[in-house]
Length: 309
Image 1 (cartoon, helix red, strand yellow):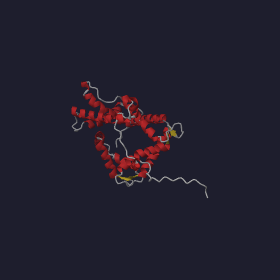
Image 2 (tube, helix red, strand yellow):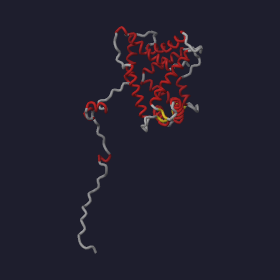
Image 3 (cartoon, one colour):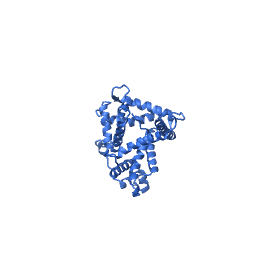
Image 4 (cartoon, helix red, strand yellow):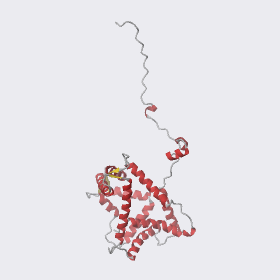
């Protein structure tokens, strides 16, 4: 199976963005998309939110247990969504239904998957394998063609521990935000190095013009197939426009506008929550009473004064 590396996917994404823009460059129109720095800030905010959610003791550090628990919560959500009958086992059929549901909800990803499959089908490599089956086989440790919850937990634990061991550079058993950022940079560097090694087919430590062209052209061909919606070997203006709208839509999905009743906006505007948005009223237990009312007791009469006998 042809392996598409991180750098190849980046080239593919750039191709999806560049081709429609090149076709309409003569219009000199600015695309309504966030700037690169806005995208970076958005990614940082998402990462900061995930870190704060995982840091359950709020000490500004992630322990290995916190990292494992956070990943179990994240991956477990997909597992339980795929486990339709709730028996703690995801069959191959359930997993494929989950995959189909995701692709039906994300047409842009379906286009890329279908283009990759077409590229793979046209390849002369006879040792092709189904990427989906390869992923299931990675988790399915007992080879029963099913994925148990215990196997998911085991994969999350071993993977998190491996990453943790490499990223915890000061060996204090915790990961600081700086160590996490450094780990991301290290992962990107490793992906780039792997992409270089994949392109260096003669293993001489350098890329020839032919090797470089092949490494660039193969993802570009996939990008062409994604944009060529009717697969006639031509990219029409309509197809370019549709791809452009698809990319813009996906970028905008990552933009979360700050609501008018967010704490920041309330402080800046000086408004009360009910002035910015309707505040619902929730029923309280016992109709708003904290305890059941006891029947009134008659007032106790004072004892008559006199000598006690």
